[in-house]
Length: 249
Image (cartoon, rainbow, N blue to C red; front, side):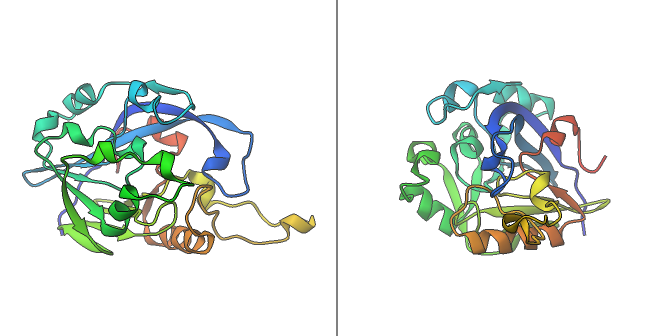
């Protein structure tokens, strides 16, 4: 089985209330969280996992402050490619901050879950502001259903939670299976606090679902599945990722 290295392209950062990431936790705590496009080379194929978005374009979708760290072309240059040389984009989901630059990869085929694409084209009003069909025009979608290996040693795992068609991406590395969460989350989602004595805290959660979800029970189950499947777990927006140069180190 081939092994790969994941290279994070740190495109920007967004200032968010952490309650968006963690159900019933961290409300009122604001932090800068990374916007990352992940690069992996598989044989002759140049693969991105999500593509991020610029601060200028994100202003149309959110009032949360967004700052650029590097533009998309400059980020790709750091790994030795141009947007035209991207062969594949694996979309964990189709929220604006994950798909904003995909249309710049004119020659890429775009792997997405059927459930996610259908929802993105006709989203529920409660999540509609996170999607924009204009970002999806002319993309060369490779629509799949469920969990499958998309390249030798690279698997997508359907984990309905944050959106109906979220897919985690598992990549075989020299140090085991690295899994990009797909769902928007941070490290706290996988390290919940111990139960407290107060009535509202007399519980034991093995995980904390994402704060923005479609179905709470599915979100909990999918987060728990995700926690158990990775040797190297990569929460999509954890602030620790700012310091990561490659996975594995």
